[in-house]
Image (cartoon, rainbow, N blue to C red; front, side, top):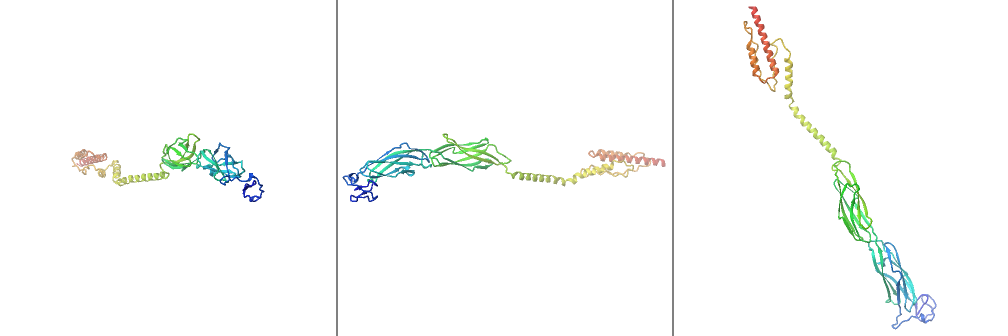
Length: 393
């Protein structure tokens, strides 16, 4: 078997030109494959890692160099590949080397780890393997590792961003760890106006890479409002990891008054209606008792006005009529007696009037005045009658 020095193709001993590239095949012992004792070609592959310190950030790129050597006695094609987790995001250039005996070549490996929580930060071991095509059982391998830098990507979400309530506002905080390392933080609520009280559960979050956690927030105003317009209280939810800059989320609570807006007009209408009902109820009983209550003062006034003037005729003045509500005891109506001709005075009427006046202890002043006037008129009539009788005699 003759090996083409141009392309490395293995040709049988008979042809003078390479059956693959057409190059001339000189007869030389060095170009003949050494089949060894078992009739198989003698192959040997060696590999050396030049770049040993592999350090890269997530989403970045790092390059490693390897020297691959053909230590066999035949022209060989050596294939290089990456083993382990970085194999999915590693590139080998070139993938196959054609090497003459005792020759070596350089292979470059470019590693591009993705920026994803699926690739954890830290040391990632992997290997590089070179395989001989002439003898697939001939393998060279180098083991190394890659240091992947951590990155932090916290994605908080506050729902709702603005809550609404009279006494309390409820929020739901969802935190996703999109980084490649665990995340631990304490949840705080920052109120710049110091008008709110906050209750958070849980207070501390422990999130592995790629995980999500939920916290419940209850925001309460320190002072309640009975009436007035709604007031907005802004606040911030702070995720403090202690070893890095905190992450903040803005939120707000819209505090409503305890009484709604429509309650004031309705209450005013109800109060007005109540006042009107009370006024009607108070006026209605007074109107029913007005005839009996007001009749007495009107009658008394009329009687007083009638009895004030002094009349000269004793028989014309009628006796006074007492009020119907509280009628005083009325003395019996006694017409003035006609005295005999020889009688000069008329004491019986005076005595009777005096007796009648003393018997009515609770009579009104108007009745007493009327009785006295009647007695005086009777006395004057009696005197005139006496005088007439004397002159006639």
